[in-house]
Image (cartoon, rainbow, N blue to C red; front, side, top):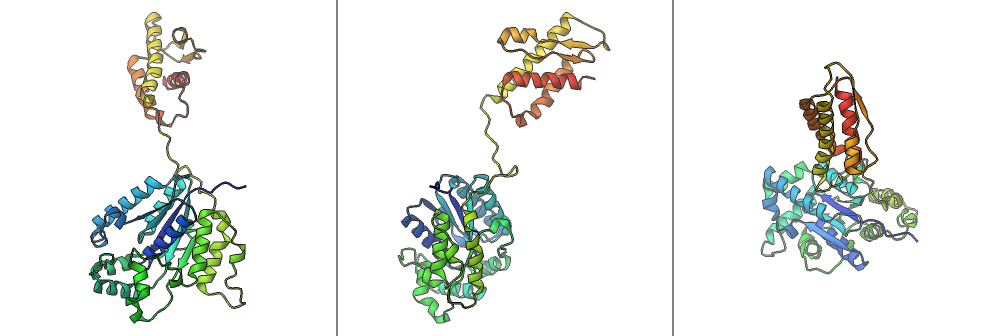
Length: 363
């Protein structure tokens, strides 16, 4: 019996007013009904007004940082599934989110709401006419146009966009935007499922839920309706994503670039300093007891360290000449700079490494 797959980061992307919030709420409700732990992250949940959050480059940068830090707080292998409901219009930002999932050994899914700019513009104009409804927030025309112009469409060839599911609203008459479908997009207290709003919405929703929860197989879902007709571009997109469903259940492996550096013990610096200093004290004591010429080779033994710590003892080192205290202090500074990359935390091993560095650097 397979264990439960790690948590998943679900990234929604699309033009403003492209039904992303409707999709996010539907996916959240279905995951909760399936017994999955899930968290929704969006601008309203962070008390951010979208017109203010995207009014200029500085505020947009702050908004992205706030969303990213919130996602980082929730994403972990055994944590809840995280749904990020935002435009995520910059391809580089979506890559950063993918790296966060990979760093935490979690899965990542992209949901692309592919409504056209004309449809999104119509929705925004209808939202502006319904300002009396507190749940409806229209973008200002200048902000809306700027966001649409700068939106970067996700590409399935990019590994950080895989797997990607595409959702597109069914074509309806322009006058219907003020009717039931429009309300389903933006009324937060609506309990109606929005799968009927999209082309092949129920099939796509079911595939997303099954993939995120790690249930079932998608082999029987890759052929569309099975009526022998040619598949639409949306069905072909769904078939491609369903084909990699099994691989998507596996967590992303952290690489050297994305792996989190393990936190050191609070007394690591003190332990390093103490291990290095006892080597310096031993060398300085031997220099004082046996003063030699500048060019005469010297062998340093560390029997005094062995007697004090009752350890296995450090190996003797041989230098081409006696080293000075000033040189030893310089060697110590250089050694501490690279100490963060040391894999070992043993005091004896650190002392031995420093002693070998002294023997190598004395010339």
